[in-house]
Length: 121
Image 1 (cartoon, rainbow, N blue to C red):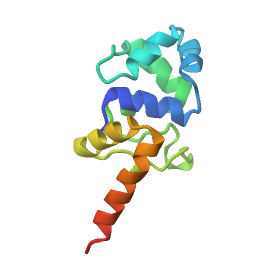
Image 2 (spheres, rainbow, N blue to C red):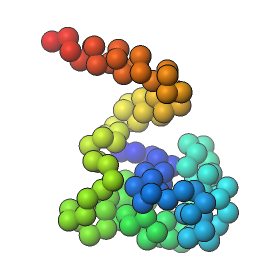
Image 3 (tube, rainbow, N blue to C red):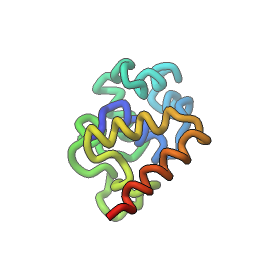
C-alpha cells in the first residue's frame, strides 16, 4: 500500500495538475502541497483531503487510506497510468522512491541491471 504523500502526488499527477494548480483549487499555498508530497512533510486536514479528492477525481477513501478504488466513477474511467505500475508493497515503494531520486542518466543502468536479473531463468 502506498503512503499518503505518494497518493497525493499520484492523484495530482493523474489529474495533470501542478502543485500550484492544486494549491489554488484547494485554497492553500503551493508550499502546503509541497509539504503534503514530502515523505516527512505535513499532512493535510480532513477538509483539505476532501478538496484534493474532488479536485483530482479520486476517491476520498483511496486518498485517505489507500484502500478501495482509486478513481471516482469506478472502472469506466481510464487513469492516466495503469495502477499496476505503482508500488504494490512497501519494498516496491522504497525502490521507486530511491529510483525517482536519481537523475535520468543514473536511472538507465539500474533499469538495465534489473532487467538483466529478470532475464535469468
